[in-house]
Length: 252
Image (tube, rainbow, N blue to C red):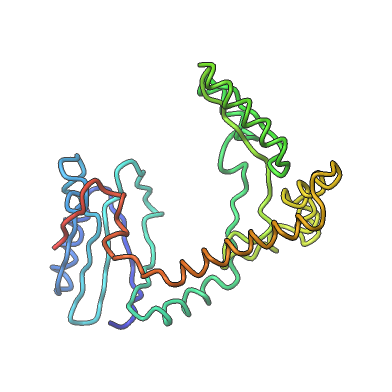
């Protein structure tokens, strides 16, 4: 199948009627799948369209669906472009070019109304504790106190480890668009493994010989895990839906 570039429309519960109307206009073959067919039988939205596709003899392709349960339908923001196909290398080439100058960046203040995750603890009736997640000893002490508190029957604790991601979010993320190289280098110096190593050396617990033995053991484990993953067979296609649904959905 050649690659397809086509519009994808979202509807507020009337996707079936709309797509059937487009079929009357353009002709062709219309395939519809409902939410009930893919794991939501009996739900109020079970007869709504999860995915519909109209293909015509003239070469038109139109896709559409109803908004998923719980999502708001916003007119003016219900149109997308779908790019699909079967040639993986071709599609990857398209996406690499489309995302070449993009970045994945959402400021934290746009994700939640409070400055720290730990501040959310009050809303759930539990203490929120914020600490240096790049400090292994502090992380241990804070987590230990939270465990002891729970074992005393005093309930859960919301822990927020303040840390830093020194690498880009993904291969598609150009992190230079939202942080400087100097910032990244400063945070690399606070690497929790290096900080713990310095502390252990300062306290006479770790020497060069033991550090070398530990590094060798770690690399051996990493190499063994990498070899195992590379030799492992690809997962079955049906495993992609587990454990998303309680039972494997039947789709004609």
